[in-house]
Length: 434
Image (cartoon, rainbow, N blue to C red; front, side, top):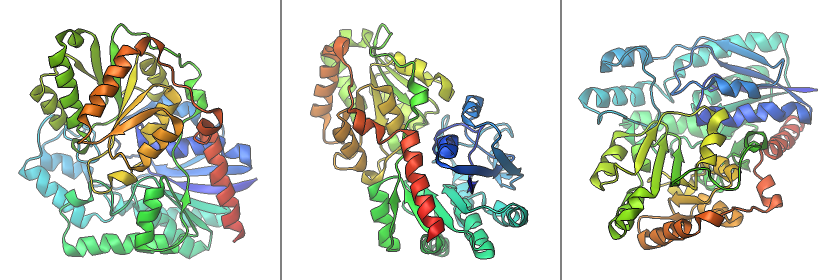
């Protein structure tokens, strides 16, 4: 059996979206003749803990862990946070808007911790893994980012050992939605772009999650980029039911809701529907599950929707089916950024597995909209599509008793985790033979 070293910052018991992709690949790699070894942080700073994900780790998998030196303890002290507080990603602020101290911290993070706050873990990881690899040879190294420091660890290991390297990008680097919020100096911006281009040029193979990301990277460095989207694990949805078991028409959003995803047009449409039909406020419910930015909460108040919006804490992945089974429709939000049409969030594929109609707020010509059309599971609505959005919500309301999403068996299997693992393995086999 061939062996692969996977370098990932996020690994159970870490929760959230960042851990899902490679946890699921690792779950199925042995089925295709590859034995995975995982290298991760012993003390990661992660937004949530989800011990339920540990059930997906195959028995006997070797997980290597070392301590990572990160600046977050100093950051918490500087900003007056408790040491037990968890740092949210993508500038999510749940209780207050960022002040002067927060903005100074962002400037320091952007200009002194390049490419990210895990940069101090790069050299210790290279030294540790170089020694480990000298006694435990592998056929391939895979790094997954963000954080993109993982790619810099792998790049040095490739140079030192000659082992082929596959770089997997779950999100862009300099074109990620919050890059312009990092308050970068020209020198820092050049360094980010230099490191990004070096990784794109040096890796033996590169995987991306969307066609748009491949096009974006090709503008930086022209080469072949392999599309392997995110997906859903059929094992997670064996208990899904056709119709929701809930007394209200429930629209659910699952996951962190940052300010760049605040769906203003959705709040506007919902407010107008309720103003036109006040009884609707007793029949409809919007469930926001996970961390919610203060700007979103303010919008809910602004549009008078406090009585129909409920906030729920993070739900362990193993219990998500229970939430889906109470849900009539699912709300999918694409960040309002210049690269919004490139975004293909992992949440989309979990929603496909839930087999509920999807209301997407995002570009109508983007990668997400294409998949929704291809699978006939929902529609995208941009800021200019309020009338169409209102009509779609009314359609779902009027047909909620017989709404059943039926997907083409062939099409949906394209996005199962096991099928996607086979694509990774096919590329891995080609890469080690090149």
